Length: 426
Image (cartoon, rainbow, N blue to C red; front, side, top):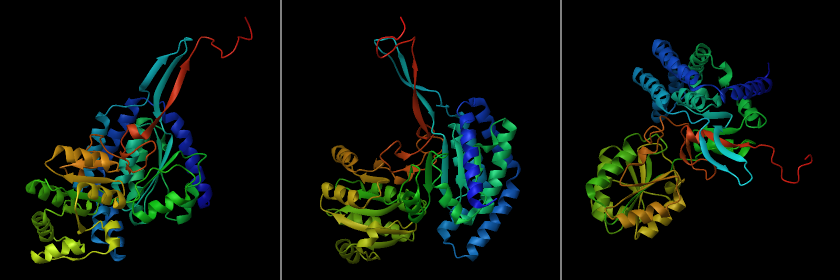
């Protein structure tokens, strides 16, 4: 079977499975999720051995340390995946929820009911845990999933797929409810992006290049964030300890992820705090790229930094690097962030509530923070159980996407023979 025919069959099978999934009892879906957790624990040694082959190949190919960290599995990571599955089982099943209802004057009853989107294709790089996370979220929300991971984690994704299929089969759920593309051939992606007859939504998770390619070539609606260019603004009324804790966490806790801070903007009246923040970051191995104004202050205070280029403030580093600038006002900081942010996650640190609220309303991003690290933009941290991705779109879903965001709705209308015009038969 050639690639085009194989991908089309996968999509057609997914469409058929989605129609069955839409009415699958919660008990069956939950049984599949619990069964999968058990299978992953029982076969963790095999999974880790397979993953090590992917990791060794990536190392030989010169993959960066940050990306290798994403690719690598461990007993702890597998247990975390399993715990996530068990937490997902505890969450309510929103399929069938009546969102609104009304009875019209003519006696017609109208219900707005939550239903699955249908078939969701997820395209992602490096992180094999995404295979299980996305499969589980789609299953719980009644959607069929087509998973297309990167070539660097192909073997790991395939073994996860094997156990996902086994868990579905044992629970009595349709086995084609979750499928992975069984090839690294790039043409498979090109075919999939045009199967709008079968696939209802595409979610790309990865680097800016991948997401842009998907957005530009898909005939299917795309839910995405182009990149995670997150900003932190240190206001003139910022508390020093709060600022230090928030900034260090947002940049250093896990620098390779999309909700890590990339730009630091400090009010120009707080040069002392600018130096303290950058010194704390530098002590943790962060390279400081400073604007001319910021560099002058840092040089005078003996904090090591390098000049920032204009492009640096539009760069998602995914590494221990941060760009630093000054702002003369809250309004200027808001304008700066709206100009440079990717509309992902942005934060203000201040002790002034009115200034915080102005920032929260003025910054046009999917998630805005006051005195908290941007690292919390995460489905699990938001109480969603997990997430299938983070959307910076302004249609359908925005921010971390959990179970509710993987649904749409339809109207159920019940009547007793009402007509718009005069009845044809009295």
